[in-house]
Image (cartoon, rainbow, N blue to C red; front, side, top):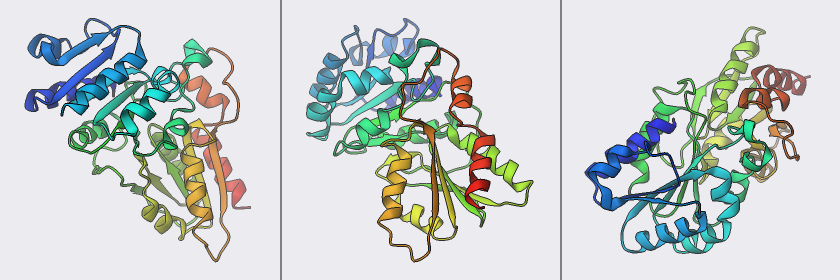
Length: 306
């Protein structure tokens, strides 16, 4: 996913002279071809993330389309004021490519774990939030970001993530039903689509069929599709690589509570609890620790159906 997003920035920039790239002290090989062929539009700044946001906003104010890449926690926590005032307030065309969304940087500990990035940015007006499931969805996503009005946050996975959405279309603001069933609905975003699909396979072996709704756009949220799928089932589970506070689970809960269903729905969020994740493991070990696994999703669905 990381390689694809950078390759796409390069390919889009070759076709569109409005496109600039800004990096924060990235390796010398990052977009080397971009730097060699379009040096005037390639800017590699130091570890000064707030400055990068201001620079990007200035370029966007002059009609440029800016793709900016650095670590997710540095973008969202360190640059919050600049994102709000320089980007969102003025609807500037800056695309924030966030490396290490979720618990990708588990070996580096809680300072680098972007478990709250969606919650932080979901509350800011004019911000669009995208979380593709795999590299192929990223390839389809990137062209849609060029002429889209306003700032966009693009949440990257670890890299090397399995391809699970090869044939889905992509449109900003749309959700996609990946699997259909009648017993429960699993709502997911980003790389947890693979985990949800694995859980559906486990449940299917026990005669329980579930629908899976993949939401690569977290904001603006496809409330229409959420409600169309939710009305069909008694049980809904949301899975995300993020804190359960303020992320996709909270967003879906808000939609469901305001829908006024005449029949009751059982609902559960699966994600990081209200803690700083402990330990220095791997992404996989952190997922296991906090139950973001196919086994736990399947067990949660079965328990809610009791």
